[in-house]
Image 1 (cartoon, each protein chain N blue to C red):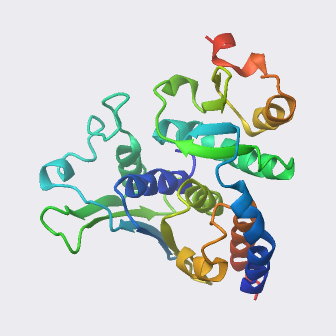
Image 2: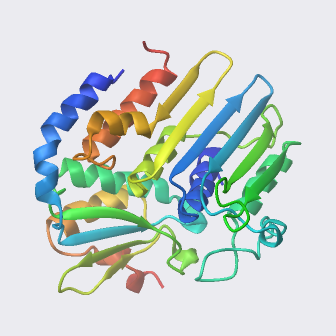
Length: 184
Length: 122
């Protein structure tokens, strides 16, 4: 992938497919590292599926038996000296606390670091694609913190106006841009 | 920065209109957004359709949705246009600029842009 934000979009879509109602996207950035964590309350994975989940020949897609989403993220993390960690609880075994947490660590000064890219574009794409799911986004940086919780937006919008309304998507984009540029 | 008050204003403006929109939308634009599509550049293509359809005032007629892998990864980004009573049109190797052209000529004008369809790119 050309941008880590595209990996975020791709991996968060796994959470959507797992039937999550809330997807957490956290980017924790220091001067040396970036840690991306995607967590969900979806159906989770059974241990035998989890054990092979970063194998390119493991996939949930039905069009062909190859899935490159997690293998790509793993490769991109490892090529900076970091790595990928996934924990998951399947709903059969954990009916009240199921879900998956995918966490990738990157050393951002490494020459093979993939740039973060258009994080706002990925978030807006996720919300447009799944307006009934909630996303809790937080990007911690040394100088500031940017966040968005669609549950708060839903409270303001009520039931009549869905999150994928074009004006709302524009609002989300502008709001996040403002937060990134440090506007009050 | 856009405040919550502005979001509340959007609600006031939209709440009556949205109800009218339910069940309409004669044209459906579907963008493939699996790993293959995303890696090939589907995100800006989707944004171009979402923004372009809204700006062209086509929101009542056209809905833009995302789907998983369509099965022709080598042609990604792939966009399918479904219209009631017409044959499906499959656009391949799309870009944001091509999307703008499709909105103008196909969604607005009614004639598919043949040169971007799969039939002319095999």
